[in-house]
Length: 224
Image: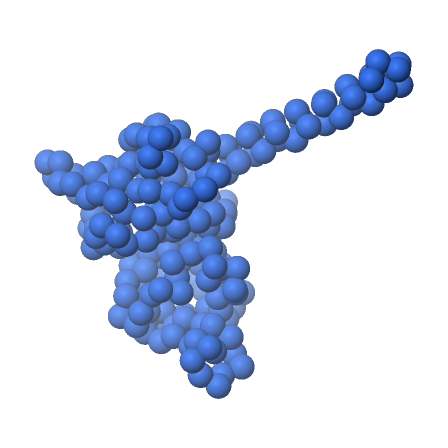
């Protein structure tokens, strides 16, 4: 689990893409400039990279290596990154961590596209569009939480007709997140609030169960 409070911006220093090489290692990133988050690192630890929970397969004093499964590449923008790109990184939360953001699984639900970026005083307002036919909008509510490239942010508006939502990035966050350098048309990884997933998901399952039980009882009584 993670908090959505980004600890450090690291740099992609090497990419192994088996589709363009003869490597049998799989799709891997080497992520450098990472010394501040590697002091207590172990092989097998989870580090959230742009919102995706990835497993450390190797590391040294300043860099670590991770594998990216096909599911991760399909769900996220990580496959579009290039050597030299910055990524948001956060170690898994510990038992004594203050939960200053919100609880994240590091399971990216989808990408969204920046459709506007407007300066508002010393803050920046962003509006994001979900992909066509996305089913995520019911989980995105005004003043609720959302993770964008792993950063816990507050939703400022939701446009159900347009299928979009907005956030405001304060000046402090602008110095800490890769989102500041992104422009209209760029994609970001999003993870909707896990609490909403369980509440809405459970409601749907309960409704289905009740409908089946009612139908069963009506059949037993010969009413249908």
